[in-house]
Image 1 (cartoon, helix red, strand yellow):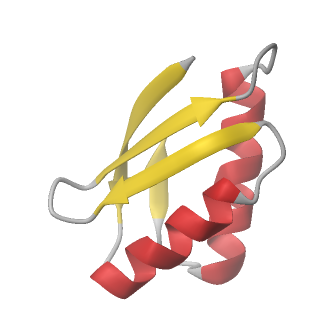
Image 2 (image 1 turned 180 degrees about the vertical axis):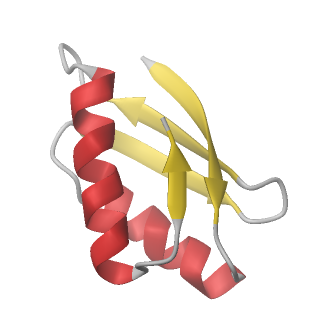
Image 3 (image 1 turned 90 degrees about the horizontal axis):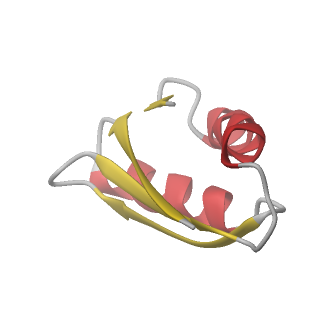
Amino acid sequence: MKKSYKIEVDCANCANKMEEAARRTKGVKDAVVNFMTLKMNVEFEEGQDAKTVMQQVRQNCKKIEDDCEIYI
């Protein structure tokens, strides 16, 4: 399953860090952050609950870039 989320991030480098943090999250098959459109596209592993996984993605991103936001 793929979903798109609106994000808030200050720079392209921070967006890249968010993308890597999302990709390393358990339950995420792939993640792409587009800084220009301020969107994060996430593909979830089979059988994963998107809402639960995205809460963990948000926590992982906040560890790297504390002023970023993902609107779930």
